[in-house]
Length: 147
Length: 147
Image (cartoon, rainbow over all chains, first blue to last red; front, side):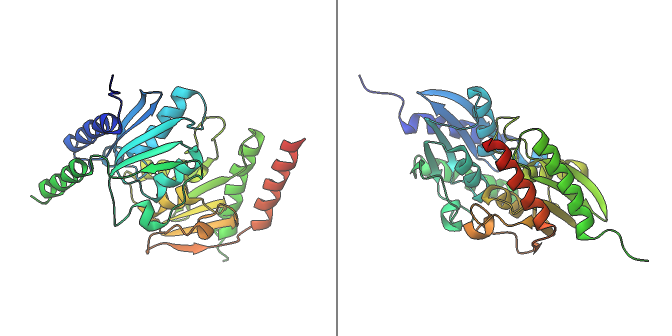
């Protein structure tokens, strides 16, 4: 039997979270953290609503997942996030020693790869999963905002 | 009359916070955020107690200051922190557009300067204020821990 728990499967859940951010007028970024094919954290960007630059989807997901696991290291966890993490989020992921990061659209302006932020040596990265869907949502957001 | 509100004055308050972290068994880093010579946030590292890698002193201070100000940008604010910020905290400070950062001891291993993390172009940095006091507290912590 085919395994339904693909990277696309979980990225779709992250995209649902991004859509929830969109509906709240937040830059539409969503994230989920998965361990053993189980979602243990699902979050979306809340920087405007909380008036807090640290309230990126990934930061909340790291806190929620650690809370669920009862430990601060995200061993055997995968983060799915619709947009490439920024310096702050990549720096937090470094500390978390997360096993795997899967992101959708690249952020060529403020993404951690361009910025040169270092991840933990234990962490592997998969890029571009449902990237078009994530990028489309971002574009739609900024078009709406300019209206 | 001499202005008592020097960088040393506020760094002493950050050191008091670092001592509170020390007493809780946390890596002793403390921070305060100041606007117009008034402390609007005082925090210390709580990563162990909260089981959360994102609970660095600076991250909490950014959230608390934004909450106090009712806006997410830390305009005209100065952060005093006993240890050079890491990638995550420098990344958060980038988003906050904070006016000034004053740090004590350098972190030659995981500090943002070695890591190449970018701050906001509006931000100025002062290094080495009461650095010895901050470094001594860190050394004392790791000696205790090894016992």
